[in-house]
Length: 453
Image (cartoon, rainbow, N blue to C red; front, side):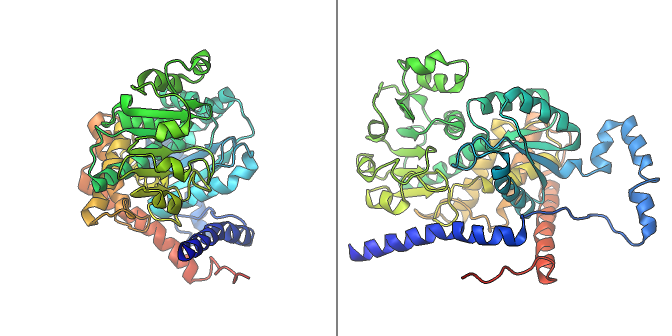
């Protein structure tokens, strides 16, 4: 037990290290992204090409044929990351300024992993209609929209309205990205423990944006809704939850879960939901005591526990393992089995942008999840390694191909592009983005960080 105690202490110390380094290095670099040119400036005369008077010619061409905006500008590779700062990374309603470091971090991942140029846009409004109107007005300048860290229930209406209204993809990563990564991880976790996705009993802890979307994607891909017992902050969801029914217009998705799930009519809270469950999927409050080890001990043999709250999971992974869980995953990059949206959105947006998709469908998300699971399974999976790592560079263009191929199959792509071409072009753009950073670091234009204390 002494060794175990020391191990847990060491793991806890390691878990706090990223926050310490972030506070030290963010002010040194004063942000994480910048604007860089992509065209040559050989002499001052080139300004006449890239700006006035030459720029008037592509302007007139686009006026005559608006689709040419994709050929003459960076619209095809530029997205907006839009937030109101009301639900930021497990920190809650911290406001648009405090949310900006997260949005810059998201933009960094888009560029480094997907070669996508992303612009953080933090809005000083909490009004859903005002946010919808603002994003609608932004459409001409962007190839896609990533909604981020917006509180429920308004996040559902904002996403649904904008998806119906705009002619470019609108994606809420807290919903769709999370569900995609979760489905990929679940497929491989169940393969390891030898269980069938169509026959597992599943407990869901937390019914915010993430788990509502997970419920939708999981039930569309084989999980029996009757075998799901879901909990929100007030307890298990079931048909007699009059508080949810009273607000069924605002919480339409949650009310659907009440009506469709929980075939055994379980009541109570998290302990009751976990009893006998094969899988726990937690996207709730930051832990570590939201899910307790004694509750995990009541789960089925070879249980799977996904504790995904950030910055601290609902239960520490080592505690879940000691309690009998065979496969444990979190949302953190410094623990094994990271269920991270960063495996999803860079490549998915790369593929959607490259075929000029009008939207991102749930079927595109499922295709990406299957590709992630397949990639990891092909190179070998085990209890502590169920998904690709972000630095397995080959996975990102393959995700792009999965998204682009499904978009074309569903008729939501403007371009018809062969799989081989999608892969070749996506891999080059992604490789070029990483190489640009390496060159800037090598030349000292991105300085080495100062030594820590």
